[in-house]
Image (cartoon, rainbow, N blue to C red):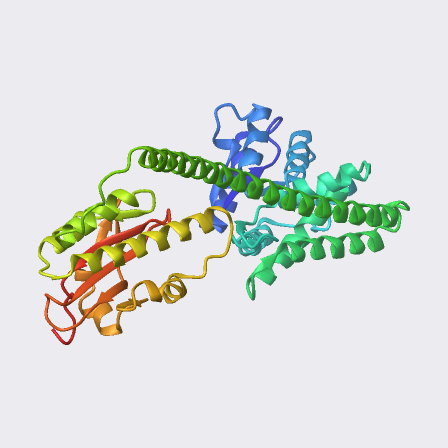
Length: 431
């Protein structure tokens, strides 16, 4: 905690300026200090005001009346800084006592030191839970600013009324923070409670009770406005996010339209100049390459899949082609459904609906827990820098590698079907 030692400087000799400050530093040696008596330009009044801005607490020793010290007290109060007023010579100046209210002046430096230690506990940092669920560090200055804004909006001109509220409010909030999280609702409740107390105590100021009610109503309106602003800000961000997603979707749709136009053009060309019937693939690799070409808009074939196909002795490449083309068709329909914001039945249901086209083909949505853990590396591929665990797979046949084919795939963030394996049965507990 940093303490500014305020007190008479002009018209004083060196001992009068220094001795009491040195004594207070010994009494509270654990704190940092801003001490004008140590400045060569102690007479620079603006420097004193800046020091008040930068400190946490002001100790004002008014052993004689001092305009400069009074102004520093006023600056501290206007910035929400606690002020400990020391009145060793019992001046009992009512103006000064009013400036530091509800704090009471103390008669000597020892009691001022004790009060400083109490304030050190009060000034312990704590966080505030905001209405949006986020947290921020509590700030005296922000609270003072909010109180003064409420007074300003209520058109109440009373410099000291806000100053009398903040000290007790912060003390009670600090006590709350020791037992639970402080919320913005707690802050409002404590401010309102202190407004009511001041209104009751300051009976000589006839407008105080009405002023307190006006400030509370203004505070409520400001909080309601902030809630509305939060909702509007969240809605604005949501709209911006949706506009970005819409632009991305439109770009993808345009690309699909372009591909569809190319496909129509190719079909029209085929009607005019029919090509020879494409021969059945002579290998799993050939089947994989054919699907890679025909479904390049929605299927990604990784090099690892090609290598697995090259190593496969599967004896029926035509079945491999049928299975791969079904996967490509499923992936395309899935992608179009997402782009058009339509429901897709799901890969499992899709293959069940198309079972008549390949009754010998089985779709498996996931691997066993053992395979996922013990043999995860063999089922993990790298796609665009990201590792993807392949669990979905198509199964053809059983037994030896000549009669067995397994096609492992997953979907990426763009809804492409990423094929990472097309060949022998990967390692499992039965291997």
